[in-house]
Length: 102
Image 1 (cartoon, rainbow, N blue to C red):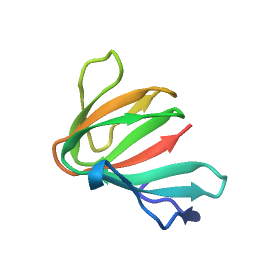
Image 2: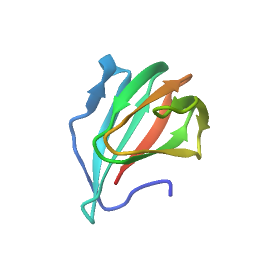
Image 3: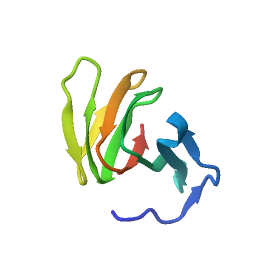
Image 4: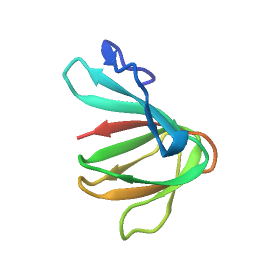
């Protein structure tokens, strides 16, 4: 779906890695939480508490889960990250994403 309807948005941005990743938290009517953001060209390591699904909206790059090989990713694709782990992501151009939390 191209948009989320009837949501609350946290006004203050989440800024990570000196501005190389910026997102906003969105809270849906059912109380579930997502973040919508962009990763500027860079290679970053994220740590997770909850399981996540990273959905790529625009851009290209690649990601690596612990113990796995680098995988290419582009608009229309997603990958799942287990809880209490980490992943690396490399954006080769601005990478727009939605992070769905479990």
